[in-house]
Image 1 (cartoon, rainbow, N blue to C red):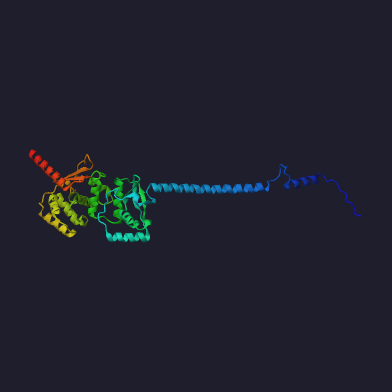
Image 2: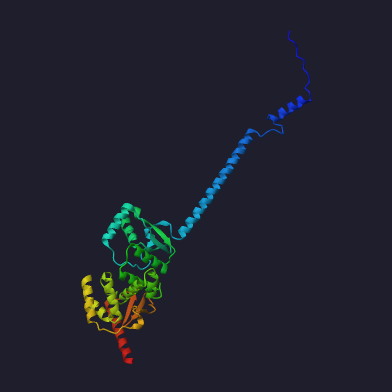
Length: 361
């Protein structure tokens, strides 16, 4: 028979030790208020902590995205972001072009390059109503128009949108781009200065030269002014103006300052179709027969200015434009269809008026 063990009550020290042990263990009672954190709460706490870290990462990324968006908008506002524009929204005749002659061989090379490599340098445009006006890149736009006839991928062209308007900024951008990519001829430089002044973009041809060719030396700007005078005086009659060398153009400008305009214009007006070489030979012959006159030192070698009179608007549309220079009055009628008979009648009435004017004086 097994011997029974006699139990004894624990003393005070043993009871304190037991209570300390129970306090250190997690409770399984749902009614225990001093229990440790349940496992589900620990998972929730850890998830919240991770979410907090994720939110910080997202805020950093969001701030970076917002900064990039601001930079992009600033770059777009400055015209530094190329955008794809439909060709039919671009007005190629927005401003007068400085380039007069197209090199067919160079255009063929450009077309082939665009087919193989695409466009590496976007054109430049400015907003014009619901569309865009071309500032620079006339040849590239023309090439895209040609390619788009057979290849749909060329119906849109990359373009920088500048806030240039149709004023001086547009002309400066065009001239600068052409000077960098392919030098203009001396005559083309002078001509664009005259055209820009004629459109009222600049107060005078000299002011146009000073702004459009501000980066050029004083001597080069003086040459541009000389060719500007050649264009003003003879541009409507010259058949091959771009072929004029710098030496030839300066020789013509010097003769024009000496009063040879009437003689040169008469020679050109009476000539038939000429090639560049024969045209210059004709001009040289006219220069030899032109009377010499003393130079006006007060003009300091600068080209003679052409005074443009205020346009006269016609009642049924169109306008009359007039320019006065030394020994010449030029009248142009724009926006009106005039028959040969009507033109002759206008000339006869003008001759009659001039006769009466001389009689009074």
